[in-house]
Length: 371
Image (cartoon, rainbow, N blue to C red; front, top):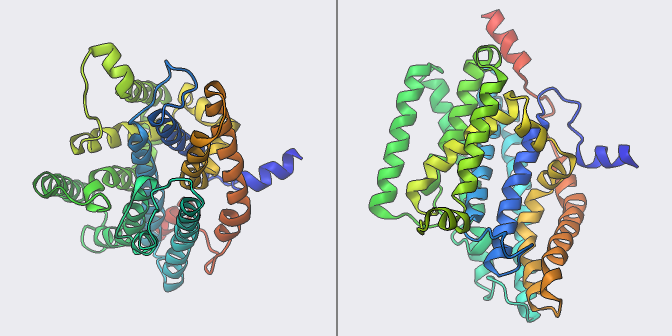
């Protein structure tokens, strides 16, 4: 039974390129979203545990992780000269299948729920095609157009780094700083739409930069910086994120701050980036916590949990359930629903490949040696 469970939900644990703690990091991201939405609707584990208005912070972590993992693979493909036509076909098909089918199913289920008398954000027929065209993003659906469009932009950024910057560390730094300040300036002046990828570019940039510089200076990360340094920095970053949870920040300092303002995008991304490095290269509390099996399991089903938990929440809100039990009914039911979604839809789609060769850092070392 245990072996079947591990094979079903943790099939990549045997691979050296797979970092278990990053599964747990996804778990943290979706738990923040789920706790935020339940708190926003006055459904608490306890009245002193209030996570309202922190859902976006969890989504920022998703953005950093996506940029880091995707751009790392794309950079490796370019560096090892394996960015073939087959590679790009595989990339775009897998990115499409990773998000779009489940996204459409979630939209339809939200629409059907609304017809059944359970209020959802998909309350007009036109909402579904507008969301499918990535032109609208209501409630939880706002992040899908943002991330999906980054999947299209990311290869262009990596191609530019390869073709014109030749992976030169200084040139890369200057260009990314220019990207960063340009995107911040445009957002401040024009207040870009909620579904604009460029609006959140400072967040994606952190994941991209980490992926590139980690590949360029792998030995430095592994040998020059001691694990306890990563541990300490990760704990400090995590503590700062916890302190900025609005409910607790107001209790501690007596002031209200809108931490969802665009000025905080980049700082939050930096903090999550530090925690990501701590998860990979540290050997202390953060790594141990993120490798907990339950948290990793939540991370594996995180996309389904993200898309469907609001459906469950809307049902639980209207159900005649004692208030002290509502959160537990909501959380457990959401996990069950997300698990079924992962097993029936997500996992089968993730197995579809047209280009089977996996690019690893060994390929990069061989390429470097041959040159």
